[in-house]
Structures are given as structure tokens and as C-alpha cells.
Image 1: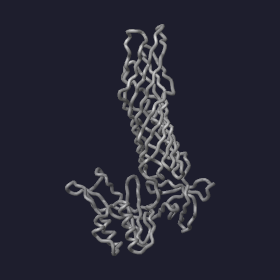
Image 2 (image 1 turned 60 degrees about the vertical axis):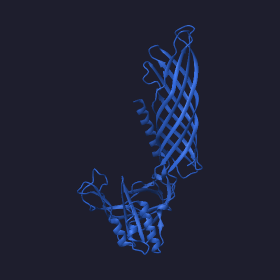
Image 3 (image 1 turned 180 degrees about the horizontal axis):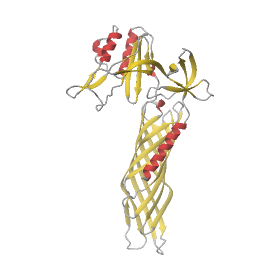
Image 4 (image 1 turned 135 degrees about the horizontal axis):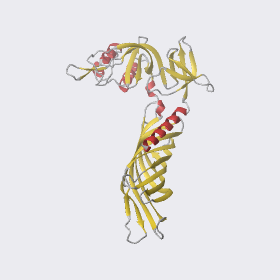
Length: 410
């Protein structure tokens, strides 16, 4: 329960950092309902779902304002993205097996949407995404924009069928000498396939075009080696015998980890999922004078080897600079092996107590910076948790800071 409370506090903290971090203002424009084009600075959120509004400034020094789809026909960020307002028929049938129906035909509803421009030329390709729903639209020259039809449905036999009418739509509308029906029959309803097709069509038609899909992004996967040092504090106690031993803080030990970072492709690549297995080896000992028996001393020896599997999220406060600051929230699964705390009395004949260090879970928070060359530095804190679970009267309080350096080699 204590770990859950700590995790909740840490999550609130990182989302607070995200909420108050500096906006990503980029040079852009919008076109109002009177066809007036206005240059401005747009808060670029690299939207995962197509927006219905956006924040902007006419000058960098003024407050952010909001424009909605009702008052804007088009807006864009220079050399990055473009959204155009259309009134379209859209089929929002679910691809989920639980919600799938037996109707192979699309069920259209008329909506006003900002469609994201993917390829602009003689043949135009657009996309729309909302909470996992993804649809593609197209037109040729100044024709009406229509949805490319792809629908999953249930057959009478209870199998999943697919209406791939989008291939016929493309064949009937975007004909060119180097495009065959055989090629279209292999076309999948996914962004990369459709973008490549529209590039091929525009090239074949000798049409100038813009591929907005060429927007530069960082690598979406990084693999790093992460050596470092841990500075720990450990306190153990036996509630029955009233013995307690404070081994103090500043217990240093090495750690070595491998971090896999999976960048999420939205919000300007500011969010990432982390997986970091780490090996640690802590050894320390300290002698204590008994408070209850004259002349008795206790030697406390700690020997811990563990594999910590860290899983969490990272938020980059900025992704445009050479040096990017980030914050992490992590959950840690600790797997100790050949690990124990031994308490030995100086009184002859008194048996030593061998306490097995148990495996368990904890949480952690970290802040750091990463250079575009791949070097990283992080300070991480793991709050107090018990490494002597299930040992009767014995308990412990163990916490530590980690100073971690890193280098991305992939």
C-alpha cells in the first residue's frame, strides 16, 4: 500500500512537470473563414488524434489564444504539418471483434473534421485518427474529398471478412501508366503503403507534390548502456528483541544496466516507455555495541546481489535542443539472489542470525539530461521499502540514490 501511494505521488509529479513545461511554439499559419491567411506561432503538440482546435500567438510575447474548427479552414506548421477542414462522410465502424457487425458496407455519418494532409499534389491523401480509429481520405485535383473504404465485418460463418473497396476507388480515380490492378491488389490500408502509392501516382502524373510524411523525427528506439553508483541507506530492526541497527547512509555500490527506450510517436516524441534490467552488488558491514548486554557487540554484514527490472515512462521537457532534460517514473521488480544480512554476536556460543534478503517491488523517480550525441546523465531516487519481508519480527528500511551515466549505441 505504501509503494502504491508513493507511485501515485510520483505520477502526479511527472504529469505536473508535463503540464507546466514550456510549450513547443513553431512558426505556422491559419486561414480563416474569409480566406485570410495569417502568419502566427502555433503550439505544436504533434497531435496523436486529429485536433478540433489549436493554440496560437500572433507574436511570441503575447498570451496563447485558441482557434477552433468553426473559425478556421486550414492551419499548418511550416515544414512540418498541415490540417484542412472538410465536411465529409466518415464510417466509424469498429475493428474490435466484440463490436463488429455483419454489415460489410460502411455506415456513413456527415461530420466536419480537420484532416491531416499526408501527400499534397494532383492526388491528395489525408488521414483522420481518433482514439484508435484511423481512416484515410483522398481526392484528385479539386474533387470532393471521400473516405477510402476499408471495413472489417463478420461473415455468416462467424469469420472476419474485409471490405477493401479502397483499392477499386484508387484504380477508378487515379489511373496512370505505371500503376496496375495487380499492384493495387497488394496495397494495404496503412499509412506507409498509401503514402508510397500517392507518391508514385503524382510522380507518374508529372505533378509536383509535397510529402508531409517526411517530417523528421528522432529514432523511435534507443538502446543504452547505463553504469553508475548507488548511495544507499539501510536500517534493520527486530521488534521483539528491540534490537535495531542503523547502518547509515552513503553506502556505495556499483550498478550496471541496459536500457531499452521506446519513443512514442506523438506529442513531438516527448514520451517514451523504458525497460531497464540492472545488476547491483552491495556489500557493507558495521559493528554495533549492545544497548542491553554489557560487553556485547554485534557485527552486521550485508551482502546483496540483485537484478532490478525497471519499467516506466519518460517525459522529455524539450526535444529541439542538443541537450534534452527529462523526468522518469519507474516501477522496479527486485530479484535478489545469494543475498543476506548476517548478525553475529561477540558472545561466544551465541548463534549468528542469517536473514535472507527477499525479492520485492518498489518505485523510483529520476531526472536527467541527454545529449544528442547519445550521452546521458541521470539522478534517480528510490524511496524506502522493506528488503526483509516475511521474516517474522525482522524488518528494514532501505532507500537509495543512483547516479547513472549512459551512452546510446543503437
